[in-house]
Length: 141
Length: 157
Image 1: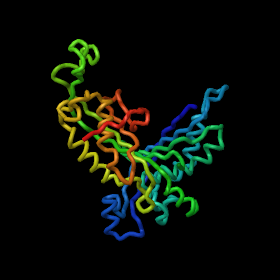
Image 2: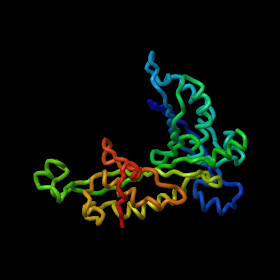
Image 3: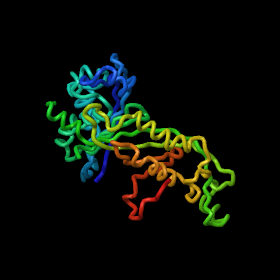
Image 4: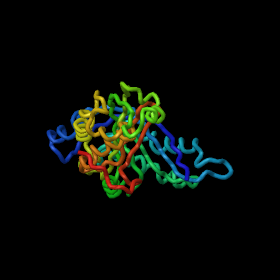
């Protein structure tokens, strides 16, 4: 089994807010991430797929194909968007766009497309919010 | 995405990682070895007055994503645990003088394992999954607990 990772970047804004809580509790738990006008990051998304190299091409998957899948399934929805306001899985308080939830949501966006192509399986999603902060999801354990 | 699938998603296990900087000095020297053997094993890392590194400590925790917060662990709690248990202890110090390294050569392998042991069990509700210590841009070490080691856990106090 070979693991192949493709990296992509997107820039987006967000804020952390739980509608079920008071403003004071949101402020206390989320600190400045709760500022209602939001703030932004340059995110790095790492998509790792696993499979056996094709005996003819030597590829686990075609990297151009994987690039296009990431672009279509994730970047068009997230890049230069406000995650709380413009992205279906986070809109209207459905989920807080933490780095953890972005990793899970990116997995759910990519998993059907990756598993339908070329025999590889999605193995891991890692989302860097800054160079020092990242979240990782490896599917539903 | 339906509310049901979102609910399932946010109860899943995920991982959260954060990188911290730590500057410290050390000297690699084992009292169990002769001067020549120390020199052979550790080379310039055995120079008598020690030397220093800007270490990067990467802490990876795992657990359920709390549906109220969207978080595995509040980063403030992780920062505080690393600050009080690791950075306050090791940053801008000579590692060889720390009681934890009296009988343990402060190689980065051992620093990595020691950091893991200092943080393990202190990050509720998340679980410590892995500690990675980068000694330079080109050297790094990872420890995920003693699952590869059948021996008893070392007792660190």
